[in-house]
Length: 328
Image (cartoon, rainbow, N blue to C red; front, side):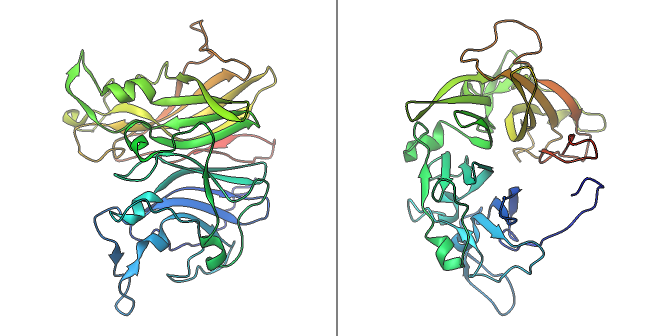
């Protein structure tokens, strides 16, 4: 979308069986997208009456799109890199959720699935965005950032989604929570212990070559506290489980403001399908401990709540005639 609100559309076909989750345009003019397919126990899916049995590991992960071009058919989709830690649900190992570009380098997160490593990955070499043929892209190395989880056991400890580099040594990572309801609820809070401990906006600093967690911003998200929506069944009252996609901006006073889309949990059985929220939080860039005051720093404010039948999916800073603004 340009500053005048004109849309240009580039089709993709890598996620026809499930969903894309994030997209970004690189400085090279190409689009990068992350998403998921093969969400069930299938390793293959029929995609047409004449083309049967496409291995979905070739249609899962991070994808390269050329603006305005007709996307190639499987198995020639420009998917970037491959991960496979076992024989069960191969698509889940490359089930990416968030992505960003910083310093001309592509990064993605994996935060779901019953196997693989939930963590933050760098795709390719620093300073070079992946390009080339489908065969070239398939061999792009995926490297876990130093300090982030690097074992398969991490599938039960972290659920990263959106990521934003404030600078070369400060990284914000959204944790959406594990989507599990507390059974029974504790004092009306329906989030389980893991979400209460790690979900929200995590702040990392690069220290001696390793990313180190500084603190987790949660104040104002009301994680696990059910809320009501007009014309929505009260039996399905959702609660915030964490946050998903994010976008950030620098302010003039040494702070940054991060806009986030919340994740939800409820009794509906479909994590994230309930009406959710667009929120924002302001953080002082140099801080290494949680703000001690109850002011605006470190506190999430709700900008917009979804209505019945509506779910907010992404947030991005968009250009306008004044050189700023945001949209979702």
